[in-house]
Amino acid sequence: MLKMMVGRELALLPINLKTDMKIQNIFFDLDGTLINSSRGIKYSLTKALSSVLPDFALDRISTSLIGPPVAEMFKQMIGNADPDLIDDLTREFRKSYDSEGWEKTDIYEGVVETLCQLADLNITMFIVTNKPSHPTFKILDHLQMLHFFADVVSPDTGTHPYASKSAICQHILTKYQINQQSAILVGDSRDDAQAAKSCGLSFIAATYGYGKVHESETSEQLYKICSFPELISLIKH
Image 1 (cartoon, rainbow, N blue to C red):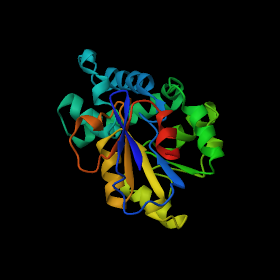
Image 2 (spheres, rainbow, N blue to C red; image 1 turned 45 degrees about the vertical axis):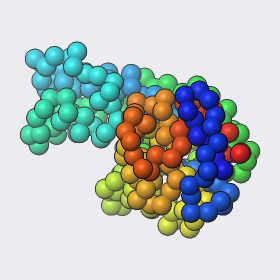
Image 3 (tube, rainbow, N blue to C red; image 1 turned 180 degrees about the horizontal axis):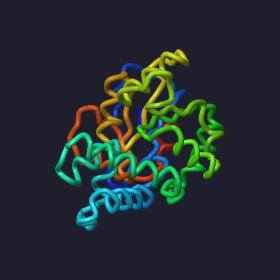
């Protein structure tokens, strides 16, 4: 059995997996799960919009929009899907974020300590993220977290770009010959939940993140954690 978080209380939930195999591998989303990059993202969104659309009302930039790929965030904010405009905004965002926005990143409380405990349990950990590899590695190196992970995979990691987080997860499953029943995915967004479902992985919703997947009634949402350290209770039970 695993434990499902209901509010701040623990409730036992019959494990709804294909097997009771011991968890040996964990796939982690990055933004909204391990790190809170909302300050840096909002900073660089503001920079890009000020440069490309100087008349845009910056008070329309909301943390609730953070989570999807950058181009999608811009489409949602400005209500305009013109490819050239979105490309210009995305380029300006990347220029700002890669140079200074990435530094405005915070680790969620208890993440480092929990990763240490998971490593002590001989659990192999991976990062699966929609963030490009350049800022991803800069952030992980800066926060001294890189050594925890057997692999870190972004859309642009491979020779050919990965089209989705599902493709990233499948790449790791294949590369490391991982049995899906021995692995879980921890994330905060619908994209994470869909990737887990697509790849046959159990999914744990990080309700403290900004993806707010827990607010959607999805059949693949089996377990919730209200803070990162609660993951240990799930794994060890």
